[in-house]
Image (cartoon, rainbow over all chains, first blue to last red; front, side, top):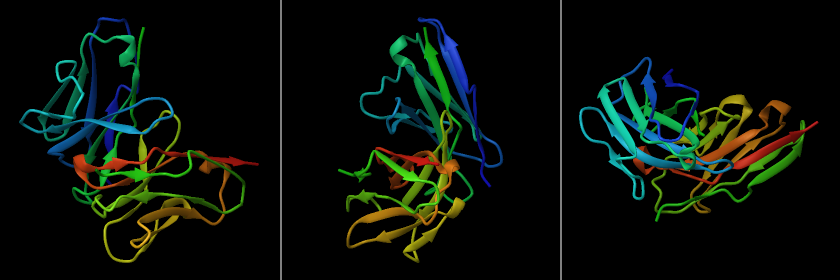
Amino acid sequence: GAVVSQHPSRVICKSGTSVKIECRSLDFQATTMFWYRQFPKQSLMLMATSNEGSKATYEQGVEKDKFLINHASLTLSTLTVTSAHPEDSSFYICSAAGDSGANVLTFGAGSRLTVL
Amino acid sequence: AQSVTQLDSQVPVFEEAPVELRCNYSSSVSVYLFWYVQYPNQGLQLLLKYLSGSTLVKGINGFEAEFNKSQTSFHLRKPSVHISDTAEYFCAGGAGNMLTFGGGTRLMVKP
């Protein structure tokens, strides 16, 4: 079945630095991937839709200059949190449509970001 | 606006007892419905999905759900839970960037 790999699973950084999170579809091509943010004990919030070869589509209220998304190939999308601050600490999850079609998403294992 | 509502934020249950996790969706949500499970510090794993066809859907780990159009519900059930079922469960509806998640239900299985 479809597998989505997310890396790193945990990252700790200092305030003001930038952090890159990778999302890879391992055994299928994904023209579209999705990035979510999840606060403790809360549901997933869609941040943006990552489109291969074009600009990402951001949800209302998500700063595109803060959360840079690059989808340079059919198997890789990256999320860069620029000039991270403690309030950016969260669990970030990506997903992609796999073998079952565009209606069924496969999720990565998530990346826990802690900004000191 | 689309919405998916999980009526219970927490459901405590004893091991080997049956459980039902409730989910209701708004009629504006396209009728693709999903249940996902999330273990601590992990991503979401698909339990089961309803895209069309039979309204009773069987998933992994002994879970099943029934799509009820008249009640706009998609409740998740398991006849006998295990300690290992303790996790967060999310109901979702829609597709792609229109996928809407419920608030989640924490299932706590007690020995």
